[in-house]
Image (tube, rainbow, N blue to C red; front, side, top):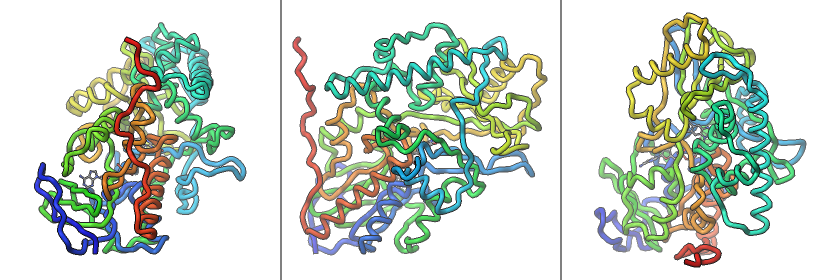
Length: 491
Ligand SMILES: Cc1cc2nc3c(=O)[nH]c(=O)nc-3n(C[C@H](O)[C@H](O)[C@H](O)COP(=O)(O)OP(=O)(O)OC[C@H]3O[C@@H](n4cnc5c(N)ncnc54)[C@H](O)[C@@H]3O)c2cc1C
């Protein structure tokens, strides 16, 4: 039996003892990465694993809620809702698309970039030409970024990238249009985001000639919730004894011979290997204590990435009084103030639901999470009244938004790269510490932020552990102890 420690007290160094571990592999977190890691282990005949999940169900950031007034309730997605990129002909398929087909998830084609109405402080006003210009500018951004990548030029902020392609939004309409083509995806401003990574992230998902799946977006309208897709997949191979729900990890001890975990109720679990799939936001906030403390290269990597927040505000009215397109863009005087409105009360979506969804992102999300629901509702109603000056807007019959940033199990919605996050950081973010692996959407180079990123990373971490178990030796890529610039600054 391998040497495995008992769980160390916080801050204490990890001591090894000689007794058999409780489990061969502990999978920390039951989101997409954790479930797909478990599926890979099971497929390779390794069944002595345990998924440890704090919530009372599997799915993680695939999360639905029952929303609406009594008798008008429906299932809405407070987390992931779209499958971004599906499959073109017999090209590579997005694995989440394949799971959606396999488990008969009800989806509808989403035309976010073509079905738009535009508004500003004077109500409806047509600046669709600027919206299209902003989309073209984003395409230019990705082309120039691709050229920079092949020439090995340094990363910049996406703001600098926009300047290089001659795009400098100045008017409120131009800024709202830019928000739509950039912040709405990355949940951060161009100033806060990497030029290069923002470009390749989108290309690897959508651009078929870059190995992407397709430019199609599917929106789940399944009343079992989009999470059904991953829960049904789990039900095919997972035994009850392989999952522990409502179990919150407090400490993780690691060494070259094993991993030990304590739960908040004091339970100790030991394993030969473990995969930590907690969000990078959780790791940044010290919601879990590591023993020994994380080495500097790991701390640097974790804190160099951004956990961005994307917030959907659900509002239900007695009946629809708004636009007939899929989304509306609102140009406030303050960039990012309730800019995006999505209608669910639409043919092929959830007709008759009376539901409209406002989206805010980044720092604005953090701002509203610190406010009361009543205060946010009052601001949202104010914006709606500005958009529809001639409508006597009734009181909402339901109002809800999920506070992802304040939630100690997530601390945000998904990761995005700032310009100072360099490739060495990514290697270090995913690098294992002794027998403890790290996986999740954030460790994905090509698909960070996406469901399919979490899928591929969970599968890859489990594959590496399978190799270790079968070969009785370690294979993972070692960390880079000191991340360096390509060329030193010449100060
Ligand atoms: C609002 C929002 C909208 C999104 N929209 C989309 C979209 O439309 N399309 C798309 O592709 N992606 C979208 N995403 C991103 C997508 O949801 C994620 O990339 C993906 O679900 C991440 O999976 P994961 O397994 O890496 O992490 P998670 O799903 O976060 O899994 C980690 C698990 O660990 C658990 N956990 C955390 N801390 C502890 C602890 N201490 N002890 C025990 N368990 C713990 C959590 O409860 C969670 O279940 C969205 C995310 C959000 C929040």
